[in-house]
Every structure is written in C-alpha cells, then in structure tokens.
Length: 222
Image (cartoon, rainbow, N blue to C red; front, top):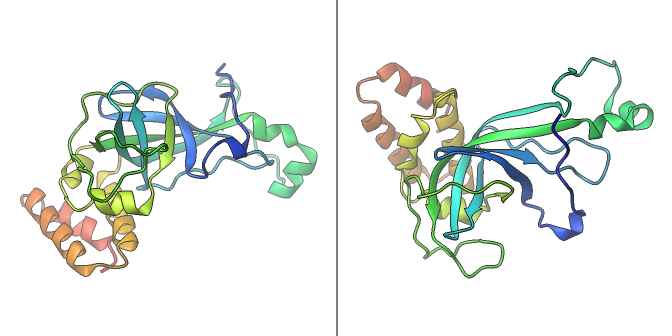
C-alpha cells in the first residue's frame, strides 16, 4: 500500500506547484499530484501540457510534456467502485473517498535550461534552452511545476523537441505531438509563422510516413 504524500498548506506553495516526482528515469518521470485542501480531486494536468522539475545537483530546470495521467486508489489491492453519487453528494456522504485516491502522471523529458538566480526556477527570456536530454533527470521528491507561458514560448523558439515527442514509448505520439503544438500555438497568440515552421519541421521528420504526418496536421487548428 502506497501512503499519501505529506502535504503542505496551499499558502506554502505557488499555485503552479502541482506535483512531486515519485519515480524517475533518463527519459521521463512519474509524478503524484498534490492534494488540494478542500474536498476535491487533485487537478489532473492536461494531455500534452508542459511541466518542469529540477535536477538538484546541477540546478538544471528539466522540461517535460505530459503524455499519460491516471486517478486510482492509493490501496492497490482494492479497486474503486461506482457509488452513483454526484461530487457534492460524495463530499457530504463519503468525504473519505477524496483521501483514498491518488492522481499521477507521466511526462516525457524534452530538454532543460541551466540554473537561474530566480527563487522558483523561472527563466529569463535570454537564458539558453537545450532541446536534448539533460545529464540527469529530476530526483525523487522534487517539486513539479506547471510551466509558465513565457517559459514555453522561450523554449519553443527551437523545434527539435518535436523529434523527441515522436519517439516517446508507450504513448499515442501523433496525438501527443499535436497537443503540444496546439498549446504552444495558443500561448503564442496564434503565431501563424511559428505554426508553419512547426509543420515544415514535422514534414522533414516524417518525410517517409505521409499518413502519420497527415494525421498530426489534421489535429492542429490552422
């Protein structure tokens, strides 16, 4: 049985601090979402959304894209069962349910940014960003943050991360690539020039697989 993570009051952490690393590897990490203070389920990060953690030894900010998320019982022996109640009824009649479930997500590492002076690891637009695997992934129990818009915009100036997304194991990579592009495109306020360049990069990466290219492009809103 996996015990719940120790929690802190919401006043002790930034709003974009959403999870904690509980399993780590060279190419990805598994994180458990932090529980909210009220009776509700932890917010599950969207498929294709951008998160970051840190390799504490080097100070590198490690960027990753969420490709899988799940909510399941903390007790791995017993499955959740249907109760036929609304969320408000659950809060009134079965409030213990919220403490018996955990939300986890896997994120594929797409690059990193070197140490910064900021206390929360936020980056300045002039800081370098590297779109290849860092020397080390984040350690166990490191905080996981939702990336801020300026971080994603800065990191996506280059498009080498698309190659990494197309090679993620155990994920619907076409849908994942399209979702990541859609989020960046939205944050860039529908920058058509950037989107055209992303399409051209995909056409090079998938020059021998037109069906996959067409499928990805069909999920991107031009």
